[in-house]
Length: 293
Image (tube, rainbow, N blue to C red; front, top):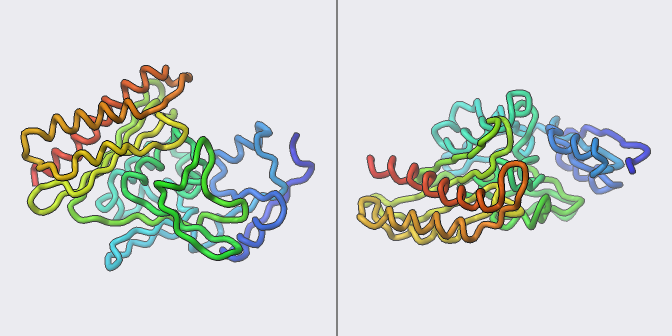
């Protein structure tokens, strides 16, 4: 049953927002692209909606070359990401993913913080942010804390975010020698959720040896899934004859570790096969540019 009354407040500071969500059955509202649907279906019944889009620090994109990080405010929209002049070269896989979500109207409203908080396993941004080693910044009545995104989602639409906490931003490290790629497989409308999507990131040293490799998959588990087998690539030389076999093995193990479900986007068996195909393609896309350097 819907709440008899839902208050709507628009704080202008993080402290005010935290105070608002600490009282009553409050729900943080960014773009509302997911929250509005869930409220409309009576799956959420908040007594208060706390809109955070008027908090300046939550709308900022801070590129910090000295600290080698990009700080994304939680209320930064996907359109903000897609059109930022520096991010296309610094975080191309993230910019590409932002530009693939839904349609222009959705991208102009949907926020970075919302994508992370919602923890929908089919969304585009979480696997990319996982592959890039992002961290979630949180604020609450007990202060602030940083949580690696790799441990933030705990299940389907569940995270470590406490009910009185607010996501204030996402911190993405900038790593030298890194190649990242994102591919999404949408056999139906391109504006739909992907059946399977894969984000890969490979880092090499000056001699062309892989020092770090990460792969994350959307649509294959209860939340965006990291592929532990990506570590098999560490120590491989990009020009080595065996790297192709290793990529194939990572793809095979990614499929085996996935736990997709049957739905309108495909059967579990089909999705598992696609995890292998698209993991291999994403890793190959990371390796080929690095080989050419």
